[in-house]
Image (cartoon, rainbow, N blue to C red):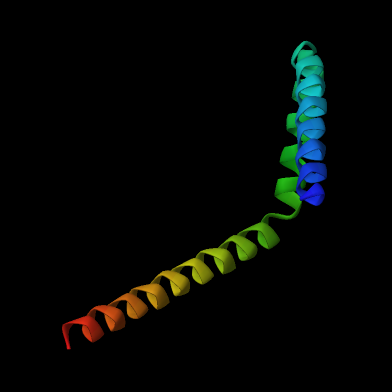
Length: 81
């Protein structure tokens, strides 16, 4: 129980800190532009890894849905018997 309380308070502190940081960054347009350029560079640099990782996640999601559909069909078939 106390472990969950610690996790919750850490998440709350992270959100508070992030909102203050973004509030300060929003007041400086040049900083926002610089952050955008940096994010764009990182995304461009790692685009192939991002795409391959996303593709793996999508494929795993499709496989999971198909497996659950088959399980549901099996359960329905058993109840009809």
